[in-house]
Length: 154
Ligand SMILES: [Zn+2]
Image 1 (cartoon, helix red, strand yellow):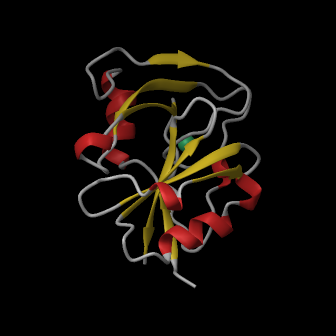
Image 2 (cartoon, protein in one colour):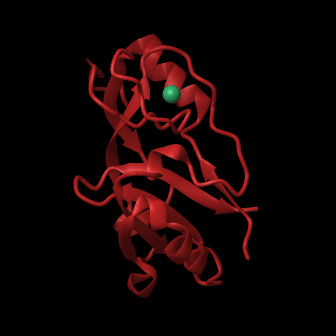
Image 3 (cartoon, helix red, strand yellow):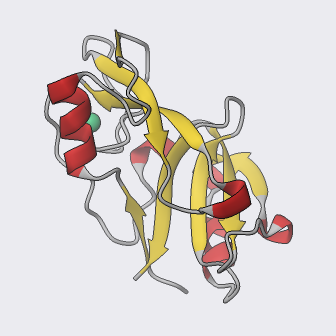
């Protein structure tokens, strides 16, 4: 079974959202309070009283034709970066997710794609990580399509 790590966005990016109020497109981030907003830095859902920042994130991978910007939430106040091996990030649980895999050229590997309940993600996630063609594996929300986290082999 492949070992893996769910990757948060870089701490420097989360801190820039908070410090400058600008997202990866230079737009002003929006401060929101929402029920169960998934923070892409600590990879936990925010409590209803925890404000979140909403802005565009420039995905580092894949590049090329399947590159995308994604709206993301980040806690408005400092939070620890998620750092657990072989653990499905809490923001994946309890929502419908899409597992997306890309090859070394950043092309989508459709046969490894899956939409499932986040509580059942281990099957499609480990299948993707076990496939030598997959160089990038990202997990998105299945309905709005926003990035939840990248996943790397360790
Ligand atoms: Zn957070």
